[in-house]
Length: 358
Image (cartoon, rainbow, N blue to C red):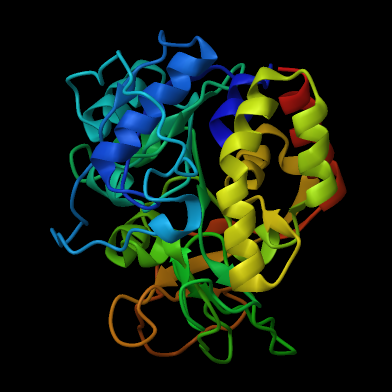
């Protein structure tokens, strides 16, 4: 849905897609990206395949095929795409685009941050003056200048003030984030890494994007790049309900009708897992943060990700309001922006209109 939304957004120009494991393994993610671009008639957009292992070279990956089906597209058994990915890896492609357009490329990272950590960023979407790219492979490690050359990284991940969607301490994309202001303790799940309070650190929820590669997420959060994290504390406020799916089906929109075929599986998952009549729009909401950031409010601080133990994938947020005497892992770390609230009605309206008019 996020890819189709990007293609229907006049504010941006999609200059590439990179792939990474998450809903499916990387090879299948690449196949799906090629298929979606063929359906959309946009085979001019290159697809670069991302890493097949985590940042620490782990091969036992967490793949959430129970959410979108074993094929990642609602088990629709679409035909094999005719097009092929480019020869460059996702990380190499990201580095090339960041060097070609320094400060102008925005990476929209919707999966584990492996590709960005290895290069510095991932997926591209040129946004008018800025370019936007969807993440897939490590870039920071291959090019230390990537963090400075990339315009912005908008990432889906983290959990603030909510339980995670992997376990009570983690969110699939990143990690649980805890946020405390100077006078009161409030837990929030962050969209990016993790949040640390000025008074304490407490695990609340993990998301699959962070949990998929916590080491990579911590590298990205502390890379010094302009990072904006959209966590499940925000995306859980943006819900597409049954009647809105019906409107998509009844519209003449090409993308809307296609999505209705694959959404049945996603709706079924939410009925079983959350006992709800609707679905969370995680990926589209993160993309909207790149398209129209005014639809959300943000806080800023240092985010770290827990990489070991039962809170592995936990995002911790430190608002830097308290000064500590001793040196810690939080000292001299760059800050990132974390989404806190969202105009859910406006986001749903934007998504619906653009898909129905496709």
